[in-house]
Length: 104
Image (cartoon, rainbow, N blue to C red; front, top):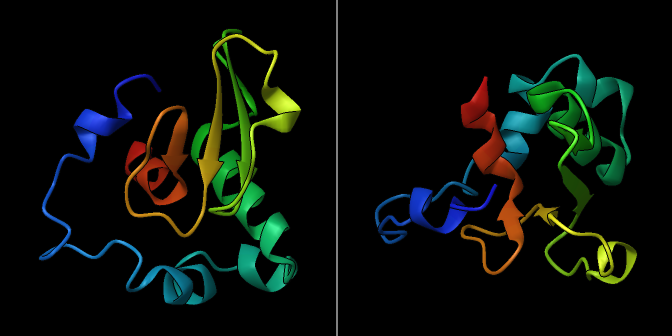
């Protein structure tokens, strides 16, 4: 969770992780996509299927959202992160959702 910037330290001119993201959600993540047409639910389903919970190792708190998701809901929680859709690279405590696809 803390070193996501180093993990994604790649050249985004040649690697476009978001280029096929929507197609993956529609066809590669079946049957979850068809059961959950709401994008917020799709994001959360992807994350839960990747890691299993929103509290990780009784230490980290994850809030799932889009690229404009704010820290309001988790601002006072230590070790909290926003897992955001539609961003190629993270910043601060905001991590790209697609990166969690490499965990399973």
